[in-house]
Amino acid sequence: MSSISGAKQSSRYKRLQRFFRGFNFDFNQIATFVFKLFSLKDGKWYLTIDRTDWQLGKTVINILMLAIIYEGVAIPIYWSLFRKKGNSNTKERIELLEKFINNFGKDKISGLLGDREFIGGKWFEYLKKHKIPFFIRIKTNAITTNAQGKEVDIRLLFLGLKPGEYRILEGERKLWGNELYLAGIRLTKNGELLIVTTNESPENALSIYLLRWKIETLFASLKTRGFRLEETHIINLVRLKKILALLTITFCWAYKTGEWRIKNHEEIKIKKHGRKEKSIFRHGLDWIRKEVWDSNISIEHILWKLLQPIFIPPISEFVAESMLDDCVFKQSIEQK
Image (tube, rainbow, N blue to C red; front, side):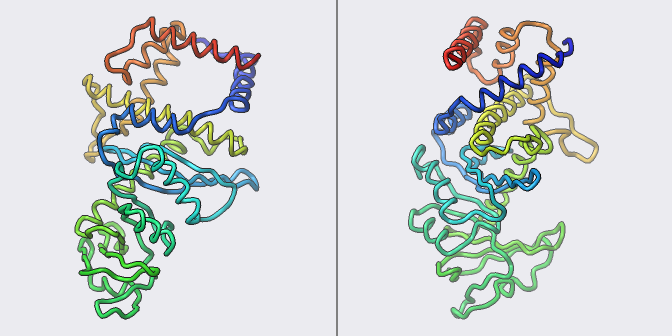
């Protein structure tokens, strides 16, 4: 593909600016699209809530995200943006979770997973009241109760654990005014104590909580190891929320393309240490990039080829061209 001139680059950049300034998204429709793309409507799923941030000069960008755990990845479903440092509060978390509940229902939630910042009496009270199962990590300096009901430092209940050993406490313990179950494990990698609280049976609490790490992979895909979201100079939160919508669609597209490549025997290489060379997301994204940049054919043909992995049965080239024409037509109306 021939290089793009500076004038064309500038023109395309201005078109993107106009798009993010004037185009509005229905974020419920995007969430519904994700559900349909991954065939999630017939099951129950673990959700994970987490936060990431970065700073541009004196401006802080803080993203609170809710994602669905799907096989080896967390898929973004809803997000809120704030211009502040620090943790989210109970109101912000409830508002984000209720977007999912209002669109898909509580019956789609197997459980909510969260790290140590997603704690608090009112937050746990809300989850218990609405019968939403949760598996959330607790700081080791928290205060709880022992078997006799006396207040103690929570780490004292897990003394003596060796790396790799775990302990599930019998009965509910009081935590920020709520009766909850506790389980803990001494991690083998660094010897750190990991304690999880839940309002469900605690037998599988630790293994369920560990699914939360998938959202760290998601953030890496959106930022440093994928789309480099943190390198954008856009600080307008409304526009950034729109960018996240597009990146969500692209992330899902790349992941489904990676799955498609594996089904077509384009396996991910295994390194000497036994780990895969790249993620399924990266496997798909690399193929999309290659097809776009190495191709000399028209945009209609590129679109037709790149959309094949996410449509079953495959769409025809005519349908792809019609989709593109429809997008161009809508864009021309908006510009007028």
